[in-house]
Image (cartoon, rainbow, N blue to C red):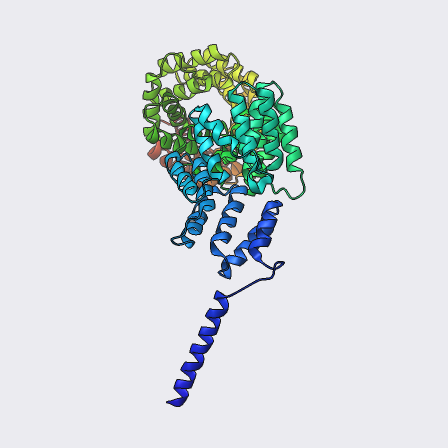
Length: 603
């Protein structure tokens, strides 16, 4: 019992001693983390200031001042959202005692968020505690400037004319004075004041933005860039995402887009969640036709700002440019859910829907196209996409009209000519098909598909030399395009160039040993050479690879016929007849069999 009491007493003493130590913690002048943190903050050493003030909070030392200091660091680093809870915690830590300095900073922060009524309330409360506090007067001056109440604004601004250095808010005084002078038409005076504000505090993007507006108004935005770069070059200045973003915008104004891109990217690297820089970077990529990068950047942005309809439309457009219609449709659908009545949203949905693989979406998209205003900027590619959908629905006449409009807008739209060729070929109009595919192949000379379809059109028109030339052009451009090589081999065989045809079929089989068409082709070439046993081997392999094809069985029957295997030939023909009794090769083979086979049917 005594041991337990002794242990309890010891624990109480230790606990009491620890609590007293924490409560009465003191530091020497050169050790005080709050004092050193404020000094680092004043000198622009934000990382060091943050570390010192966080240490003070961890040690529960001067919590109100520590939290206020951390809030100021957050503001300078562009982490405005993080600053609000810190300021409220600083005010709460004072208990019943007012904390005018923190209340004023909270009011200024709320102004950034556009919460003017709340901001005014905090600023006025701050002045109740300290009627001379410049930060509070500055905040109220801004509200007066925004409301264009110039005399009231001037009275507030004049209260800051004795402020010296950033700690006392001299930068705020010059910024407010610049705005006041600008309202009075004193552009030169406004520029001087704005530059002073920027030189005192390069971390505040509003200052650079004002310098930029003034310089642009004077026709010299480059001066703003020079001033901003000099301010950033001051030793100890820590770049923030808002700073880099604002500088990027300045570069964009003077069309120095590479520098603008670099600054936007630096802003995103500093803070990956800083949405404004991502948005401007994506817009910049899109204007430069770098759609792949634009799409990736827009996607990062809309994950942060999910209800920005303009960005969703831009994302959809960029995805279409890089051939990702599914992603484009997803973005357009999201935009349409947010703003169903906007014409640009409906247009984006229509464009994405037509290019998607979703038939229902394509139907809706086609219906939307019919509702577009007459002045809608429909592109040739839009019309081609619409025509493709009409073709799938069997509306070839209207599709042809759409393609004609596309060619009127862009006489060198290869896909429009290609689709005209497809319509003509399906309709049996060989001359029109040749014209369409010929033009598309001329405009896309490296496209194997265009040359292959041109060859098909010539073949259907019995233009054998032209067909062979087109098929050769296709395989020269794409040696792996077996469909074109098979067509080339077939055309060569029809012309009687059996050795060349067999060589092409062999190349197909090198890539795909089970390609039944090539196996049947080699079997045909072998029969033409009277190599019946070899032909039987190819046809047997073809029937294994494609047992439902009558040509393979008929060919096998012909090969066995040549080998005088009458029963084997008859069995193969029966298999062919079961699949297609009207097969031409089957009919001819059976006739030959009846003529050649002994009456007994024995071999």
